[in-house]
Amino acid sequence: MKHKPYGPYEKFIKRPLDCFLATCAFIVLSPVLLFTAILVRIRLGSPVLFTQDRPGKDEKIFKLYKFRSMTNQRDKNGELLPDDVRITKFGRILRSTSLDELPELLNIIKGDMAIIGPRPLLVEYLPYYTEEEHHRHDVRPGLTGWAQVNGRNAIHSWEERFQYDIDYVNHVSFAVDLKVLFTTVDKVIKRSDIQVGSEIKVGRLDVARSENIHQKV
Image 1: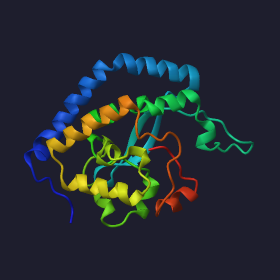
Image 2: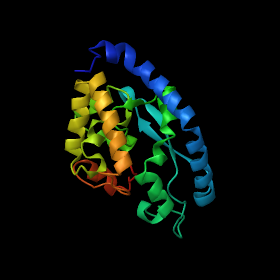
Image 3: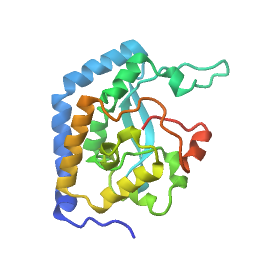
């Protein structure tokens, strides 16, 4: 059964609050965004922003924005080298500090994403979800989420991660969002539970990754 907003927070408050907070954060962090963009341009070249199709609410595809963290190195056949080869020390710093995620504030302002929600994965993963797991797309994807504060990239099971996502969808509330937000800030400051680079390959998504679908989430 498709998820339906069941409380005033999810129905009327969450989206306007997300837009307001993301806009404020974008303004306050604009010097950081500008400085990071300049460093990315100098160290990694252009384009400064990395864009990629991701499934959003109701699996509608949108363009996700991040600061690029990898070079465009290619092999003799013109194919991009593996992620672990193309990512630089500077790129790892961007990822470990989550600075590469800051452009997603634009996605939140546009309405593609929320501040809190299931992280948007690759479009190519959609065929590998169970019927229940598709319900993670009943709400807007988030900059951070319940799964991330319960292990972030250190979670070793896609099934476990998806269960956290489904639990969140079924229990959206201001209290939960507040807990996720403050826990995320704490983890980013402490740089805990962060795995930089390729993610662990488990479950049905191994099939997708075996077909050269690999990208840090």
